[in-house]
Image (cartoon, rainbow, N blue to C red; front, side):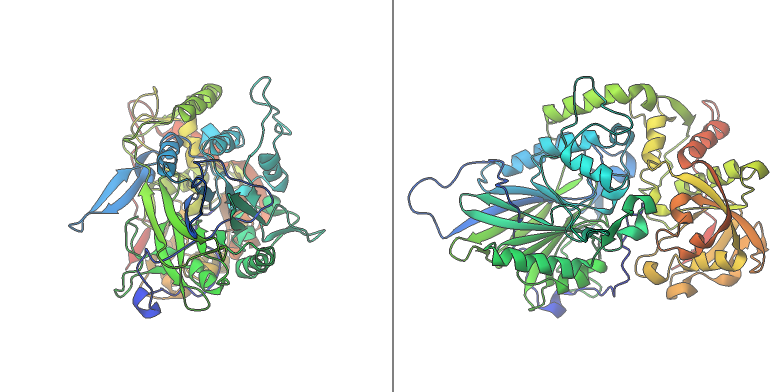
Amino acid sequence: MSATPQKNRASRRVLAAAAGLATVGALVAAMPAGAQDRGHGHGGGHGHGHKPRTVDVQLLSFNDLHGNLEPPAGSAGNVSETQPDGTVKAIPAGGVEYLATSLRTARKGNPYSVTAAGGDMVGASPLLSGLFHDEPTIEALNGLDLDVTAVGNHEFDEGATELARLQNGGCHPVEGCYEKGKKFKGADFPYLAANVTKEKTGKPLLKPYTVWKKNGVKIGFIGVTLEGTPDIVTANGVKGLKFHDEVETINKYARELDRKGVKSIVALIHEGGAPASTSYNYDCDSPGAGDGISGPIVDIAKGITPKVDALVTGHTHQAYVCTVPDPSGKPRMVTSASSFGKLYTDTTLTYDRRTNDIVRTSVKSANHVVTRDQPKAPDMTRLIDRWNKLAAPIANKPQGWISADINGRGSTAPEKPLGNVIADAQLEGLAPADKGGAEVAFMNPGGIRADLVHKASGSEGDGVVTYGEAFTVQPFTNMMNVVDLTGAQLVTALQQQVSGPNEASPKILQVSKGLSYTLDLTKSGADRVVAGTIKLNGEAIDPARTYRVAMNEFLAGGGDGFPALGQGTNKLVGASDLDLFNAYLAAHSSATAPLAPPATDRITVIQ
């Protein structure tokens, strides 16, 4: 459920100067390996007669769409752009009506164009897609002419059987067909899962690679998700599956493609990093101190065979176009296009017909904003309207009122206003003795998928929170658990926010009112949580005492790198997180007394 990297790899910054790398434009990428010709005919050939030795292949890519068919609302729908004077501007972006226009415009004049994605196309989706088990998103991706995607961790949210249905089609096994006389066709592009095998047979769950072909040009695509997927998906979602090392898997299939004569290879990796700047137009290869990119993707990129020509990545929802040296020391392009369809990456791969390989010099790559001031694609508008009509009876029902934006996903602070609301809702709903007797509640930050936005999304009026908007914030509908944990286990859990798998990229739990502590980011590891400051209702946590703790079933299973939370006993299963959230909104707001954004004073941060 989290959207942050898990793997406990060393996260070293790559400095362009230290690595002796060329500028961002100095990289090249390669394409997918599969059985069928996947050219969508985005143009013609070079004509008859002598063929030039090289041909430019356009690779368009994006990642982490998460079913955001409509433009994401509030701050979660903005991208940051650094201006010439150094100031940073927020630009509203995203929505498949605009993404379709952007991709179709980019393809013009490029006879060799392939479109690939880095995973998490579905899952944690807004109601418009999530209510229908993401069939609308697969339909939209078919319309966007997506050629290939890797699986991400969220593709496993509903398990391998449901993922197979998204690939192959067929109506939902429980809810059936959503539109009379229409059967869901499935994805007309391959989902690649090279590093996911079935435990019983050891065989790949889905195709490991595909080969895109056009007029003799062949590009192989290998797709993997992060090896740590089981740590961030519910146990049911990954039941019966095994997840393997990203580097070993990619290198294995790159050798196989090479033996088959496919020399141009692109890896689609659902794992990523964090650039030094959040602006999409940041020069990731600038040589200043602290510049570059850090995170799990760095060591992955350094380990992947030079046979692979470019890496399309995702998972961290960051925007970057960087070069990271391959094992032979040569620069290689590593890209990511933020999330929610707000950006797309345009990479030019120069294909040498004599060697069948990508020329790894003069590769150009850049991220482009999917702006909302361009024409909408009419076919995507029709698709959205059609599904919105089906969703409307549920989506438009008012749940509560707010006086201003309450930021969750769009907040970069450790303690998020919406996180406090959600944790308070869980505590209030589960505090009664017959509901679990909860004394404190924890919410994982990655499970908060949007902001609550004051401006109306439809005809409901400003300040009204609809069921659809509440669902977009908490789309997993996780069942809540209340468990016994000792004070010592509680302290350990808080320390696990900033240590172990979470040390390189902290995951700060959102806590209910009454819990307070100091987070000292000048320290390292578990010491960043100052143990002596942890208090519940003004009293120091007693290591020997038992506390009743509320959290969603994902956290209660030790998910997101919190094994201490998985040690709970005397479990009571409560209502879903979404039901408690909606009940809290109803109880604490009205048209005349809307809910105001809460103070964020539970965690004292020292930086």
